[in-house]
Length: 146
Image 1 (cartoon, rainbow, N blue to C red):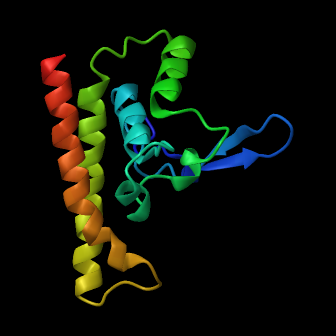
Image 2 (image 1 turned 60 degrees about the vertical axis):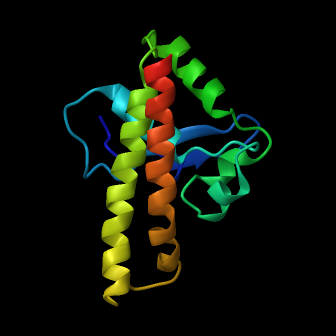
C-alpha cells in the first residue's frame, strides 16, 4: 500500500480525458490492507456539499469539491467496481484515515508552535486536528450503527 495516497501525490495527464500518469511520494509505502489507502484518500476528499469549515481548514483536497469530480461515495463505488473489494467496513478505514491525518497534523502544528517550520500555511494545521478527530468519531458512530 502507498501509505499516503491522495490526489496531490499524483501526476495528472491533462486533456480531454484526464488520467493519472504517476503516483509519487512512496516513502510511507508498506505491506498492508489496500482499504487503508482508500480510507485515507477519502479522508482527504471534499464534496461540494461539505460544510464550509471543512473546506476552509484546507485538509480536504478542495479541488475534489469542484465540478467534474466524483463525490466520496461515487469514488468509493468506482473503486469497489474496479477492484471487486467489499467496502462494507469502509467507515472504519475512513475513521483510521482521519485519526492518522490528525496525528500527522498535530506533529506539524507542534513544530509550527516551536518556530521550526519554513513557509506559509502551517497555522491552519492545528485548527484541523479537532475537526479530523470529530469526523473520525462520526464515522465510527455511523459504522457501529450500520
